[in-house]
Image (cartoon, rainbow, N blue to C red; front, side):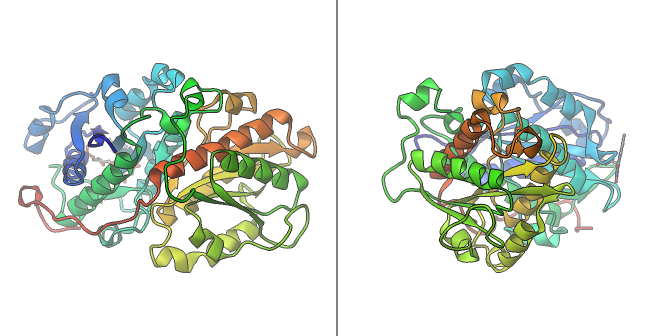
Length: 420
Ligand SMILES: Cc1cc2nc3c(=O)[nH]c(=O)nc-3n(C[C@H](O)[C@H](O)[C@H](O)COP(=O)(O)O)c2cc1C
């Protein structure tokens, strides 16, 4: 890495709660060695107390997004969703998105709400839905730090009780700090030569052709492509993803789970393969809006790995097959990624980071094949799957070795009152 990572903490806050959390996240990122910009988006802001401090924070611009390797996005929970000022800022980035200038930002989220179960999880998940479209790398909290556990163990990011005066308890400030630090470590991996846009280099991209994505010295990245191949199309998709990862220089294990049906071969995947891998691509038929129970059972069998922290910092992507175009092609992938947030891995969606994704139907969450269009995936879908496998391998090569490295100290001035 040739320079310190750049982290932008961008948030909306009306009363000051998210502002306090954002400041703590910025301090955590700074403790991780990042250059940090603390930035707000414009919107209704209440005067008084901590909120006057809020209004002195500079307003985020598109240039800040170009500059950043990592982005912490903060929003109050409004009706279980992102507050409109932050959403407006995200929506204003379509030109950057079109240029591919948002791809590969490592992102995470923070929120606050009145009710403990009033939408803190759904807001963070809604935030990431836009980020998949950016082609960002989602680095949520997971269960990777005790600071997250004591504040309610929300794996999707940091969430806190709102306060009319914008004061936040130590425990939540510490959690926000830990998230900022975690994000800065991910951003550090992506900073340096090749960024921005390094991992999003499709085979057709000139920088990829120039070899800037070549694997580093040392062992190749290890990718496990694990799927429930109860249909031929799923296995064919898995094979294309494996091929893309191999072509990008990775060592690949392509393995089935569940009873042998359409494809597979030598042996079944085991949790040992997940432990061995630096990254995984999980695939399955979609069933009632989630991935098949056979794949879910396999993920459950990996619980001891998650509990022992062995999955923290690995990378993951997903792919699905569906009977009809809209019978789970998106929702099943989002459900799979819910599990990945709990694992503390970095989610590497295809986004729109290569033209092949758009040609194959434009699913930014993962490549999908619909049986209604034929038993086997089209050439276009297979090309996109090959790209997805290559992108996972290239991104993994940059992220590799990213694990939790211990707690951060809470700085005195941030203390405000006991955690609720
Ligand atoms: C329009 C609106 C919608 C809200 N929706 C929710 C909600 O769905 N669940 C909840 O618990 N609190 C809800 N709240 C309370 C906010 O989440 C709370 O005021 C906010 O987190 C405070 O953040 P801030 O101090 O940074 O402005 C809502 C508040 C407003 C103004």
